[in-house]
Length: 496
Ligand SMILES: *[C@@H]1O[C@H](CO)[C@@H](O)[C@H](O)[C@H]1NC(C)=O
Ligand SMILES: *[C@@H]1O[C@H](CO)[C@@H](O)[C@H](O)[C@H]1NC(C)=O
Ligand SMILES: *[C@@H]1O[C@H](CO)[C@@H](O)[C@H](O)[C@H]1NC(C)=O
Ligand SMILES: *[C@@H]1O[C@H](CO)[C@@H](O)[C@H](O)[C@H]1NC(C)=O
Ligand SMILES: [Zn+2]
Ligand SMILES: [Zn+2]
Ligand SMILES: [Zn+2]
Ligand SMILES: [Zn+2]
Image (cartoon, rainbow, N blue to C red; front, side):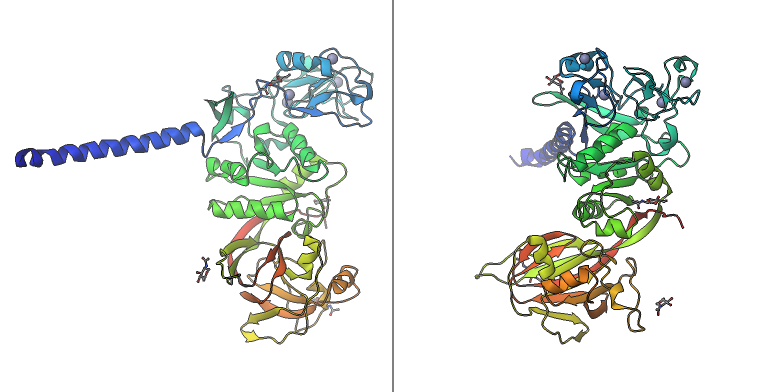
């Protein structure tokens, strides 16, 4: 027995070891099969990415039967530009190839799509106007966006150079995918991305929510799919920001740029995801503002609202010329007091724009209550406060859709300047919702409470609170705001 006992330990060690190894292997195989860390992408060899036609002044013709789409009833592919009336959709899926998102060949011929050219298109060879007659005539390449007459086409080089935005486009041969068999259908996963080795190549990843706003998010996604490789465009209605940021991981240490189409809340969500993933280098972020508010977008020069017509060429040009700067990233720790004897979980959030506690958050929550002053502010010394209904803690010089609260205080020696990368917050008081209305039209000034590197607020009663546009009702709590680090952002270089 003892002899056996002496012999058996090495045996069981190896058994345990091999079981352990098998466990690890199956964990990774499972992870690989389930595609965790891999981003699902649309298989462009199946169907086109059909989108309803917008009623515009442009006439649309079916790419299959070439008939005029009466009342614009039909669909077009937002990746390649193929168009179809309801009867020809099936045929278009099988007969016309969509923009390839991945390929094994390391060069890309122009991908010419016949007809439906943008208004005012001119031929890249002879410089004369295109589409001078009605019908499905002339061609556009869905990679470089060049347009050409049918007769001029044979005289053009076969190879596509990806046009003026090639430094932001991921060519198909750089995208490596894995084909996975899911429960219902096969799908593709993004496995790896190669650097094409072009000078100054910095791919752009576009993020927006298809369901946001007045269809504006869907429009951003559609327009950028056309200009970029469609896999570079990520819809937040089906994926979370980490899926988009996977590009930064796959390409590291190569830097990428991110363009977020959305409001302040969406931008903050992406910035916080980027921090949680501990990306190195962290990708700088540009903004296409959607909806209202857009205080960060205003400060960084990307505008206050979405333009009625999205000029993707101009946006890409501006992103290419944009300057990288740093934005302070703040941590907001909320330690809740016991509520009805229950322990309420602590929260840690991140802030980039501003925090509003009190009436200013009520505006966002859209309800109304009146109550006495609730706040004590500490910044070293105790500050005696008059009756306030709200305090605002600012990182950027824009609040409540473009109001520069700190700037309104006038130019005195006791008012140091504000910067979004100085590690300092500005704290201001607001008396009432009537005061907010006055501030918004410039008829009053806020109460200056001071500047601080750390701000702590003790909330003694339930109160609305908002951070970067996201409001909620907060139980009594202790709130502490401290600097984490800085994140890179892109500033639109407005002409002087
Ligand atoms: C492609 O489109 C057809 C309808 O034209 C639809 O039945 C089919 O499910 C689609 N396939 C995929 C993979 O989306
Ligand atoms: C960005 O800057 C360019 C000049 O470089 C300017 O023409 C454009 O209007 C700016 N964009 C916005 C949204 O203000
Ligand atoms: C919240 O944080 C405080 C201080 O860090 C700690 O004492 C308390 O136990 C935490 N509460 C919960 C519910 O985790
Ligand atoms: C305001 O301050 C800026 C810089 O701090 C200074 O250049 C400017 O002259 C001041 N304006 C007035 C009206 O005092
Ligand atoms: Zn047709
Ligand atoms: Zn297509
Ligand atoms: Zn081309
Ligand atoms: Zn021509």
